[in-house]
Length: 290
Image 1 (tube, helix red, strand yellow):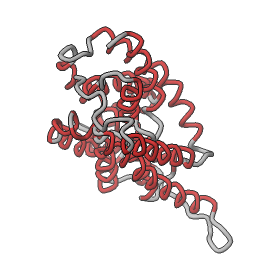
Image 2 (tube, one colour; image 1 turned 120 degrees about the vertical axis):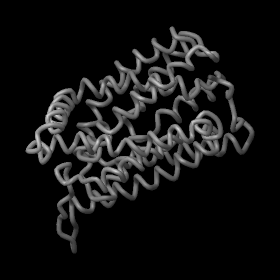
Image 3 (spheres, one colour; image 1 turned 180 degrees about the vertical axis):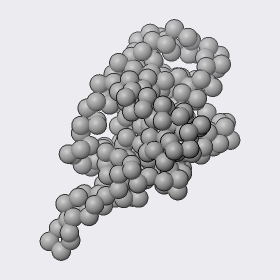
Image 4 (cartoon, helix red, strand yellow; image 1 turned 180 degrees about the horizontal axis):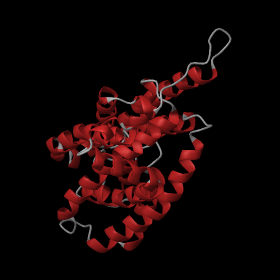
């Protein structure tokens, strides 16, 4: 991998990680469209450490508060009813599905799941799911001629059942094209949570999963065409761009609809199907990256 490729891929990772459009799919597609080798699952997982570092900094006050309350709750029974202490446990519980499935499906994640036809399918299907979830949320928030405004749930009402459902939604993002934020936010909206609550828990839930995945994949750097230098460079770029994007996205979701992302996902998926169907792109274009 050249330094130019790593710069572009780091930029793509930073721009797309927090948006509900799938960063792993965009890394795969960028390489396929440019005629580069697939950067591979290891490169994707490690560059996500860069964007996740942006989450750690952006939510640092929340994270430190949760860690402090959770740690104290281990020895102080009274602290176990504290919301922040509960949130610490809920992040752990919600991380179980992706941890189990990530290890179980490792070979598929690095192989069949990177087929462009599957990516096109997940882009469209999850885009439609996000659109439905967004419309339901908007209907509750605005009401209508024959409907009253319906109050949506906040993180104060999050329990183990919903935490596990969020976790199952996050695990779907092991397939490129699904989108970690897209799947978890969609799940949250369908369960009746506000956009802000669903997004905030989605970002907190991603921290252990992304950091663990990135650390696990470190051993594979340098085995294929991707070496340490470009990988680190791309990770730094992803961090810088990702921090700016997460700040914008958290403001965006408080007042705007997800429909622009829905439309983008569906159009991209259809274009990808056309390109593969007309043999402009092979469904395995660029595969062999490590």
